[in-house]
Structures are given as structure tokens and as C-alpha cells.
Image 1: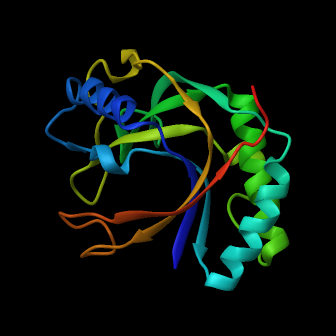
Image 2: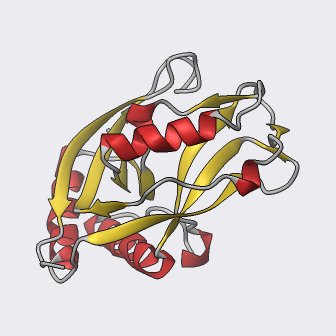
Length: 191
């Protein structure tokens, strides 16, 4: 199974994000479908069901003292940064708390066996992908993208583990990947 850990905003928030981005996109980009908008905490890679159970158990322990988190939209950006990009995104805050969740996922993955994700925490940039370049290479960042204002935030109640079913062309085809939420680990502490 190809897995990642993420925070998934409620559907109305995802719809608002996609709508806000759509007003700024150029022909060189395609919007992320509402059902695929999420904040990746850690890409976990190809994993077995046994590994997933070990990861779930360890991450649940690491989340025991965490409370629900009020996530806000930050500044927009692109990968790579500059005038041409492959990905357009909306940043997310509070960055310190999101980095803490990333680290909890990274440590749980390491405990379950095999290193996952970025080797250094500085590589993690909390964001929600809102568009991808249509071609194989980067496209010109649409004018005004960096002035895009994010809509309301949301209350994250837990961490989801999502399975990515790749489509034609390794997920980059017309249909793209299909996501299946396998489990959600709630934050047990009250805010």
C-alpha cells in the first residue's frame, strides 16, 4: 500500500480553497480536485498492513497529549519557488505545531521500521496543494498567485492515514490518484 499521513480539512473548507485558487489559475495549471486537498504530514511510502498497524499504535501514543488544532491558511507559494513552478500551494499555520505533528509521524514511522520522509525537519513545509502544472515541466506562476488570500481555517481533530491508488501514468494521468482514508487517529485531549 502507498501511504501518507495527513490532516484533511472539512469539505466546505476544501471547496473554499479550490474556489479561491481557481480564480487565479492560468491555463498552465489544473486545480486539485476538492476530494484530494489535504495537508501532508509525512509520505510513508509502500507499506504492509503489519507495518501500518505498528505505525498506528506508535502514533496513537505520540498523539495522546495533543489537543485539536486550529489550522489557518498562511501565505501562498510554489514548488519550486520562482517564476516557473510545478505545484501551487497555500501555506498552513501554526507552523510550530504542524512541524510537531510531522515529527511525531516521522518518529512513529521510524519506530515501525525503516526511515520515512524528510531526513531533516527543515525540509517539511506545511501546505495544501491547490494546483499542478499541466505539462511535464514547470509552468509560469500565474500573476497575483502570491497575493492569494486563504479562506477560513479549520479545526483538525486528528491525523489521517491515506492510501494513494495511482492512476494511469503513475497518478499523473487525467484521473490522477484516488485517495482512500484508511484510518483517523483523533487527538484525545480536549482543547
